[in-house]
Image (cartoon, rainbow, N blue to C red; front, side, top):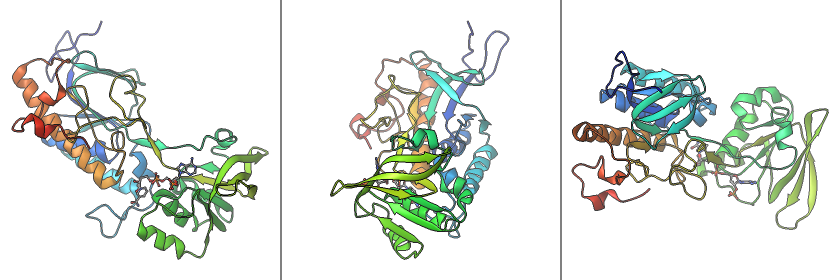
Amino acid sequence: MQTYTNGASTNGTGAQVENVIIIGSGPAGFTAGLYTARANLNPLLITGNEYGGQVSLTYEVENYPGFPESLSGPELVEKMKAQAEKFGTRVEFDYVKEIVVDRHPFLVRTTNGQEYATKAIILATGARPRYLEIPGEKELTGKGISYCATCDGFFFRGKDVLVIGGGDSAAEEAIFLTRYASRVRLVHRRDKLRASKILQERIFNNEKIEFVWNTVLTEIVGEDGKVVAVKTQDTVTGAEGRLDTDGVFIFVGHLPNNDLIKGKFDMDEDGHLITDRFGRTNIPGIFAGGEIMDKVFKQVATSVGQGCAAAMQTTKFMEELEAHGTLDLTQDPRDFGVSGLKKQEALGTW
Ligand code: NAP
């Protein structure tokens, strides 16, 4: 069995114990890297398979402060990575398949066959697009169905496409698709958009976009392995219909990437990790930020703030761990990392 030294460096018999491993490479993860690196914790950040997270799929980020000219999602991710690395964050392109949290140091296992021991973990695994879960969806994904207009819009030059959903993502991506597609129809289950006012204004003023209100998809129809139509149902009258199309872009929300935490951590009914407002989970030494724990805001700016909070709490936790020597995993996590605060003040949740 592998043994681990309880320090920052390897000795002859045991492998290195990391101070903190950050899991995820979106805005929350890189911000946690930046802050823990500047706290001299020498963090290791493991990217996951979706490098950069959801924002890396965004063509233009207009609402992250500090960039009035706006910039692309991938550009923002590269800047965040560069800033985290500048202060010493080590970035590994690997995918964490398991974390062992009933012992300390915790263990982190990856698909590349690495096993790390670590004193603290920051979970920033983010979210993934929600599926419609209707017939034809799985089979035709990549054959006319997409969850990323920025990635796939180019392939629909001169084609007819449907955008499904009524939130910010659907509105933004529908506008983006008008660059390529000859016809863009936004299909929404109600007769009002959920998207922010500024996006609503833009989308209603865009002459290339048509709206199909009060409509849900019941099936996506393919022929010769590619999308040719969708079957629909009117949510008011129940009437069934069909829309012929070349492509279906689905933006009906996001689900937290919670495979690592199921059965080990407190989660809400939608599968978000429950933390308090300090980013602490129910296990002392494990913190979280970004869309894994954020059910409400889901903005780059809020993910950055949550990654920052998780990193600052991790730093306090490490100071206290240093002082105590060992970690009692049965201890109330609120006993850690709130020096200077009365316990009551630390109880709030998001
Ligand atoms: P969202 O705000 O949750 O919107 C999801 C949309 O999909 C809603 O309109 C919802 O309808 C619809 N929907 C959900 N399930 C459906 C189903 N089974 N069938 C048909 N329609 C369904 O998700 P999002 O647009 O991906 O945005 C997620 C978060 O990211 C939000 O907080 C958003 O503000 C943020 N975001 C921000 C920006 C930006 O600031 N530029 C860009 C993208 C995303 P109902 O309206 O009827 O519920």
